[in-house]
Image (cartoon, rainbow, N blue to C red):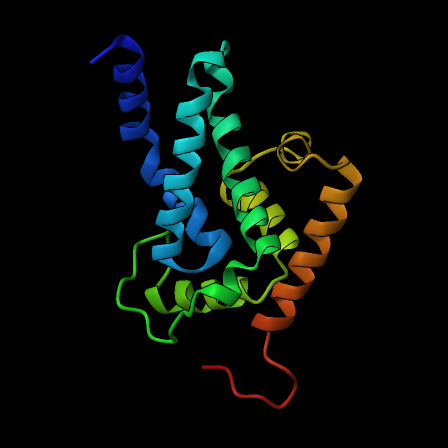
Amino acid sequence: MSDRDAAFAEYFAARSEAMRGTAYLLCGDWHRAEDLVQATFAKLYVAWRRIDRPEALDAYTRRTLVRTFVSDLRRGWFRRERVSDTTVEVADVGRGSAEDRLVLLAALAKVPPRQRAVLVLRYWEDLSVEDTARALRCSEGTVKSQAARGLQTLRGLLIPQQGEKVR
C-alpha cells in the first residue's frame, strides 16, 4: 500500500462514522446515508493528491457530502428508490431519550432539503455561518434565512397545535 493510500485509509477510518451521522441527518435513511458517504469518499479519493491543506480536509469532505446529497435530489434519487416506513436500525445520534431523537429525526426529514442541509451543518456539525455558506456555496444571508426558516419549520412540526395532546 502506498503512502497516499495509507493516509486515505487512515482518514476514512477516522471520519467515516461522523460523516455517516451527518449524511443520516441530511437524508433520514441509514442505507442511503451509507451510499452518500461511500460516494463522498470515492470523490475524495480521486481528489486526494490535489489536497494540499490537511487542516481543510474535514470542510472539503463535508462540502462534498452535502453537494452529493443535493445532487442526488436534483437527479431524482427519491423517484428511483423506495424507502419503507419501518426502521430496522436506529443509531445513537445524541443525548436525550430515544423517543425524543426519533421524533426530532422524523421532523427533520420533513424540512426542505436546503434548509435541512443548513440546519445539519450549523447545529449538528457546529459550523459557523461563514463556513456553512462556503460549504453550500451561498451567501451568509442565505444561510441565516434558511436556518431561521428551517428552525421555524421544525418548531411547527414539533410543537403541538392548540388542542392536541402532548405525548
